[in-house]
Amino acid sequence: MIVLFKVSTREKFSPFIPGPETAGYFNAWRFGIAKVPDQDFGRGVENCFKCPCCERILPTVFAEADHLFPKSALLQALTGATYAGWRRFTELANEANKKDNYVSPDGNVANLKLGKSVLRLPDYDNLTGILTDNSDEGYELIKAIYTTPDAIEKDYDSDEVKVAHWSMSGIQNDSGIVLDNSGTEILFADLAAFDITNIAFLCSVCNQAKNKDFFPAHKGFRTRINQQKQLVHITKGSIMLSNSGNTYIEQRN
Image 1 (cartoon, rainbow, N blue to C red):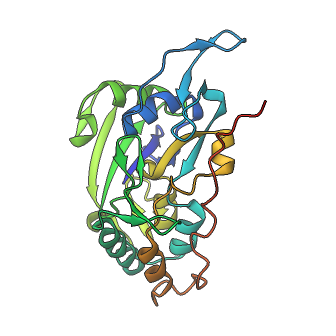
Image 2: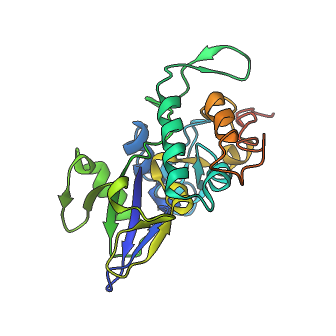
Image 3: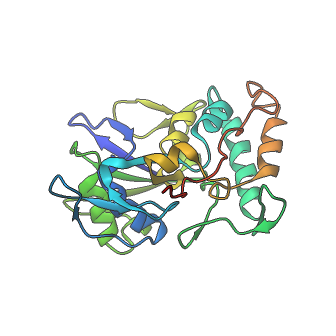
C-alpha cells in the first residue's frame, strides 16, 4: 500500500487522496501513461491528462479518482475489522494476486491491464507513507515522485518528498494503526480506502460509465471474502457488485 499523509505541526498524520490536478503526473507515474503537455481548451493554458479508458486528452478539471477495487467493497469488508480480520483479508488478496490471468465477463481468460500495468489487489502487508506538510492536494508531491526515479523504493527525504516504510505487523493496534506521536488511530477500513495503489484517474464520463474490462475480476477473492467468519458484517454476495459497464467511447454524428 502507498498512502499520502498530511503531517501537521503537531506531527499528526492525516491520509488524503491526491486532487484531480495531479492526474497527468499520477497516471504517468503509476501506469506509464505518457504525460501530455499543458494545452489551451478555450480558457487559457491548463494542466492536462490522458484518460486511460477512452484515451481522450482533457483538462485535469475533468479528472476523477476512481478505486480499481471498489471503495464500497473495501469499506464493507473492513469496517469494524480487527487485526485478525485484516490479516485474513491480506492473505486472500495475496492469494488472488498469484493468478496471472483473470476470467473476463465474457468468459475468456485475459490479462487485465491499465497502460503497462497488470491490475492487482494492493499489497496489504506493508505500508509506504509519502508525507507532506502543505495543502496543495498533493500536486508537488506527485510531481516530485514522478520526476524522482525510485523515490518510493527506499526511505527518501527531500524538500518536496519524504518517504517512510512500515510493516503492518509493527504498527497495528486491534482495530487500526498508529503512526504519529499524538496516538491518533487510523482504522483498517480507512487505510485501505486511501491506498493510492488502488487509484486511477479517469475522465468524469468514463468514471460514470465504467469499463467491464478495466477492473480486476478477482472472482475467487470476492467469493472467499464473503465466506469469512471473521468478517461477519459482510452481506453474502453483496461485495463488489457494481464496478461494471461499458466505457464511453462512442461518437455521435
